Every structure is written in C-alpha cells, then in structure tokens.
Length: 311
Ligand SMILES: Cc1cc2nc3c(=O)[nH]c(=O)nc-3n(C[C@H](O)[C@H](O)[C@H](O)COP(=O)(O)O)c2cc1C
Image 1 (cartoon, protein in one colour):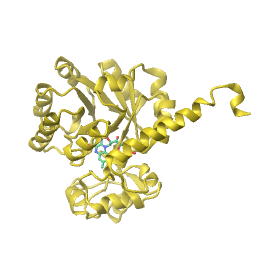
Image 2: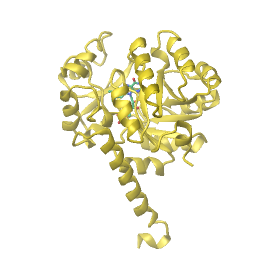
Image 3: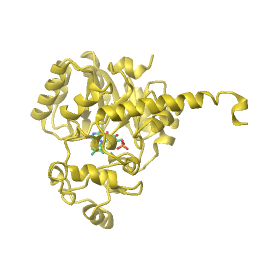
Image 4: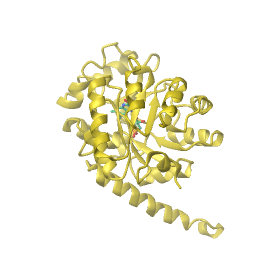
C-alpha cells in the first residue's frame, strides 16, 4: 500500500500544492474529485475566509488537506480550528513543525512537513512528522536561498529517512512523477501546473504567462533576505532582480496579479516547470494524463529490469 494514500485517503498520490488565495475550494475540490488530494491554503492570512473554505470542503466529503505555514500564522486560531474540525491531513511549511506536531497528533491528524534541505528533513523527522514534502529549488513560491534541485534533494533525503516522501518542484506530468518515484517518493505535489488549470481562480493573463514561459522564464529573488521567492520574469521582478533586494511592500499588489491579471503589480510566483506547461487543462485531465503517463513509463521501465535490456 502506498503510505501517502493510506495517510490522506485520496485515490492517486497526486497532491495540489498549497498556494495563497489560489488553493481554495474551487481548485481543491476539482483536484479531489479527480482522485488527487486538494489542499486548502492558509498563507493568505485571511483566517475567516480560509475557515469558510475548509468548511466547504468538509461538507463535500472529499479527501483533502490543509496547509499551515508556521511563520506566517498570526496566532493559533487556525491551528485550533484545524484540530477541532475533523480534518485528517495537514502539511506544515515555513518554519519548525516541532510545536505543531503534538496538538495535531492529539487531534488524530497526519502531519507532513515541507522541507527544502536535508538538514530540515532530519530535524522534522526527529520532531515526529509522519512524512515530508521534499521541495526542490526549481519549484515556485517561497524558497530556500540555498537551492537544491528536486532530483538531488529527494535522493539525499531518501538516503537518510524512512518516512514517506511527497516530491515537489518541477513536476507537471507522469514523466516527472515516474522520476520522483524512481528517486524514492511515494507521491508528487504540483503547484505551477495547478495554477494554470481550468479550475484555478487566477486571471487568464497569469495562466497564459505560465503557458508562454520557457524553462528559463523564472528567477529566484531576494536571496540575501527573506522571503526568497521564485517568480516569473516580468518588468516588476526585473527591478527586484537588478536591485537584489525586495522592498517590504512587494506583495501588496498580489491580488491584482491573481485576480485582475495585472502581471506588473507584484511577483507572479511560478516554478521552472512553467517551461514544461504548454496548454491549459482541467484538473481532471491533469490527473488522468499524469496517471496514464506514469503507468505507461512504469511498464516501459519494468521491461528494462534485466541485464539484457540495454543490449
Ligand atoms: C503561486 C504559488 C504560490 C505558492 N504558495 C505557497 C504557500 O502559500 N505555502 C506553501 O507551503 N507553498 C507555496 N508554494 C509552493 C508550492 O507549495 C509547491 O511546493 C511548488 O509550487 C512546487 O513546485 P512547482 O511549482 O514546480 O510545482 C507556492 C507556489 C506557487 C507557484
């Protein structure tokens, strides 16, 4: 049995990434209906709105999870709500999960922590997490300035820990999923792919900018300060790139990017995987195609399982 599926109750080991404002019930329910695991974000800091989104998901009766970005939570209101609501699966990110594990476990909730380094992975396992989301530097969003690729990080972590791993960063299809499984993952998480899905609530300009981007179409910004981010190359992010530092009000226009399609209002977060995305698809099509391609590649690789197969 796939341990991630046993933990989260989804049909396929394909997780939709938590993403501020984007990972709400419209997207998460489409992913969960298609057999993946939708995740509801709380990083927007809109506690009431996020709680309402979680209630909507609970009412649907589909498997889903909630992300708690530790450093960005104003207080423990969201943690308490999650513990009392009957949620089964939580991912934590952005900080040490140590203090969150006991209350979440006491509430019967499985906890996976998102890690960008081997060191963070080892500390999280010591703290008692049930699994890890292993996030390589090619992924979109908030990043560790010491970027380690998904390919290297997965192997480094798999070598040292026994808990189940969800691979994130640079994966958009069954090829990436098969590669991640070969390196020791039991599930994948996709962010940029689902930003550019039909059910994603963002403006068409954002989705199209992802489709149009090449693999070199993002950069990592603010490496010498916090938060370090990976975002699409735009005029707005070019200025930050040249200056090297991100002004504190950089994200004030983020909703204008997401919902008005003003790509110059704030950084449009996305991963290098944007360069692999060539069309908009529904969540159902993304998951169906990913599963079919994963199985086809697994069969092909299965045939390589003898010494003669390279001949
Ligand atoms: C638009 C956007 C917003 C994101 N916001 C969050 C967030 O709020 N919390 C979090 O833990 N990760 C966040 N991430 C990172 C994702 O959870 C995920 O690890 C990453 O997208 C994986 O790489 P990919 O974009 O290549 O699929 C965000 C990513 C994107 C693209």
